[in-house]
Amino acid sequence: MLILFSQVMTIVQLRYRRLPERGRLGVFSFKKDRGFWLEKLADGHCRLSEFGFRSDCRMIAVCHLEAELKPVIKLEFPRSYKLHLVLEAGTQTHAGSG
Image (cartoon, rainbow, N blue to C red):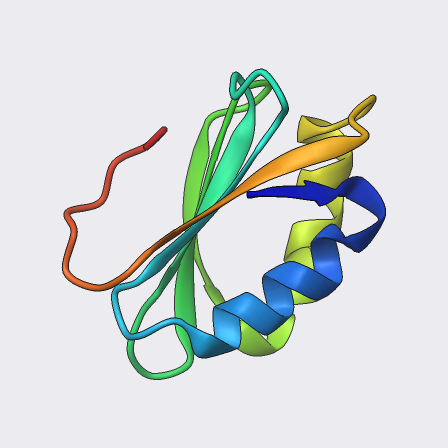
């Protein structure tokens, strides 16, 4: 599914709330060479995995999700207009770039 860059934060937050535990949400550049995965974990945490300009994987509290994602979005999608959104439900093993 393609989404507009201007709506990425709102859509990610709404879709993340609906994910089942261990579900993943991916946002990728139009060419899919940059992006991040957000995996929903138990106890109010998630795993944020970036790839593209920077490769990084870290656990964050959901209450800090917006503050953590803003710099990632600016870094990974500096000239993007449209982005790909991918949703995966439950129990997949974690992979860096999907």
